Image (cartoon, rainbow, N blue to C red; front, side, top):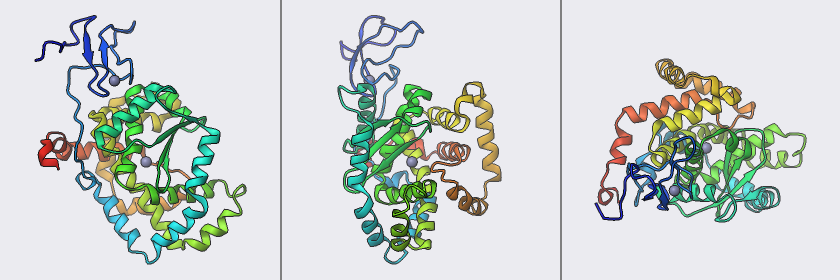
Length: 326
Ligand SMILES: [Zn+2]
Ligand SMILES: [Zn+2]
């Protein structure tokens, strides 16, 4: 161990944050926690792996892969989506958020900027723009065509701990790493129009003209499964499955989450695994889609993450030597 390395036990000494690299004095807060002054994540002597050469094929969920192949097999889908997003996409997204949301940077919400940097350096992704927007729904969003943007809704930040916020940011960065952004933006646009039909009347005929019903259904069916891959990306960044589990518990339980027993919630996810039937879910998805929910089934998502950890694939990736991961 180098002479300037100290452990958390040495109160008042300097320790390097395992996430963002910041040097910190180990002075506990009043609640006894020792957090990084930059990214606000808990300081620890444990290592934090950064992937130098992570390939999306190493973590993409098989259901995502299958649904994406089915989507891409639809003739004309790519040109239809490009036409749609040329009309409604990139510039509109940037204008909406630059005009109506807070842009995060090194001097604006610097801990969120640091968390974004942690997620990007861990997965190996160029930093996108990050915005925070007032919204009573606990959710986040990634959109764009060439230059993706990530938007975190204020309600999410009010509900989640710093580690859970990192999980959400990492999930969104996962969409960029998985090259989901073009299709995801189109899927979110369709959901948005389904929810705000009256306001957006001029756009609806354009969407219907450009995208056939088959295209729209395949796009939304894929988007559900894409979430499973990005939950895995979030786990590769937080490197703690319970952070993902607790985040999902809060998304499932809302403001009631403080009264929910986490172990019982995990048991519910395991019970769900036993009755899991993808065909039945497929039928149910049609209703979910029309209800406008973009991130349904938090219990199902926890069940999938638990299964991935238990399969050993997650640990294999975490323990992979960097030279072999290239
Ligand atoms: Zn830090
Ligand atoms: Zn997502």
